Length: 330
Image 1 (cartoon, helix red, strand yellow):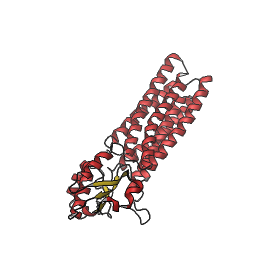
Image 2 (tube, rainbow, N blue to C red):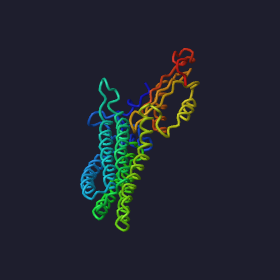
Image 3 (cartoon, helix red, strand yellow):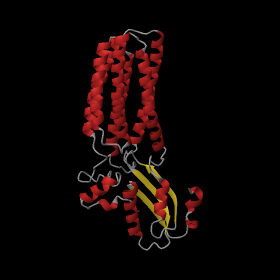
Image 4 (cartoon, one colour):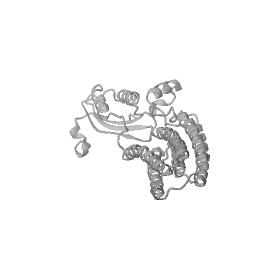
């Protein structure tokens, strides 16, 4: 059928990269053995490894100092950073899984794992928030003194580490997973900065309630960040069209293709956080150049809408003959 898998074989790679440049999702994902062009969603393997290593070491340090100094805000920040290490691990694992070769049973490979990972990640974060919030509320009733200097030093290190990690993920905004990793790191730098300032204020004023108040604020930051991630991942898990995809524009474009009289059963969904698939039934009475039409249409969908996996069913007759029209025409 009009699937884009066929016409990439044997073409020179330059062609691929061109059309991959403005249509991410245009050609990647078809790893045909080691020689195939498996330029998956940009390879962030190194960024992930460094990010995970640095952040995990930092979480351990933060937890130790948080417990020793009695700072709940620092522990909340450690929770926030741990959630990021998990987020990074999930996103990293997911990008690897997205490249996994299809098998006869899992014909899409494990691409959808990227979507499940961001979903799991969001749920996990909300659990962490619950723990922090309950402890903070308990602290308000009996404020505990805090060793402020170590808290300030550790949180300041956090600002540096998170800023550095965020910069490594700066370039990956197209991919929901990478975007999640980047936003997390950027938010973390801000949160660690808040902890530094908070500890400074406590040192000057001895107002110990600032600490649980800050930890609640951090909990709120985590919830706000997680909410959009949760919403986007649930949408993708339910096979909604990816965010920013104008389904009606795609329908209109297909209808405007030469010879097309009708388009029905149009479905657009995310195969992974980076790849989009489409199926549609197209009525085309004079289908004398069927293959050329399919080829050009698939190319167009990839170039214009970044839909790299299109499957089109072309019908020559009017749609009464199409059994599916009546069952769930959209």
